[in-house]
Image (tube, rainbow, N blue to C red):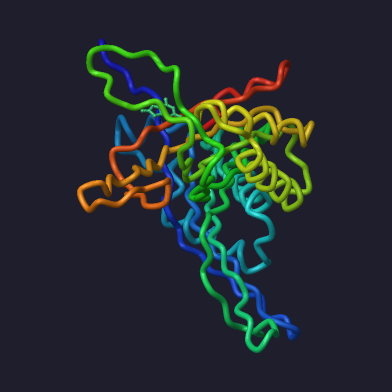
Length: 289
Ligand SMILES: O=c1[nH]c(=O)c2[nH]c(=O)[nH]c2[nH]1
């Protein structure tokens, strides 16, 4: 035969799970979007329609909800529980990948007091991807949609010019981006909450205190700051859309514009992506991304 079945995986995408912990002192909300992807000996279903080795995606969804009955914990923990369960209990499945997004709900304050059971959805999403192959569990933590802006301290000049280049050299511009970052842990045990807090803080601090000559340079500084702060992190990848802010020409109205009035464009946008890797970090194999 000149054709063969290539790589494949299957699972339930975007299982929306909200868990309420009803402590007397105050409720807490865990709001997740969970996606499962299983791989293994699945030739039969593709080639002959024999589904005896297929754990239905409906069952995978049910497992997410059933496991949540005991509590969810940190996204990495919940992902590890699920991934290990699918591989360790399903004969045909040799690899499970569980991707989680956790949405933020902040407690509302009433007359200076934290509300008992009222929350407002906050910006920014925490992410985790766990991949387990029956032996090793790879854990990647991250965040997305963390929108940040520096109103000065950003330059972009000295770039290559050709006959299509019109961009003026900028010695003082707005730098804004919505950070997507994923960092890979060298181990499958960690204080996930603390590690996430440190990484998020490092990203924000590096963005704020790096005098930027390009978003590429800022990206590298952000990645470096995260890895320097946590020796157990092996690798970080960043994807940074350059949210351009163009100074509006007010001269038709006989007005100057000393860097105060901007047009915030939403597209197109520069998309700057890159990674920082620690020398000697274990090979992530298929787990990365
Ligand atoms: O920080 C930047 N990097 C670029 O590569 C680029 N290209 C561009 O047009 N503006 C910018 N800004």
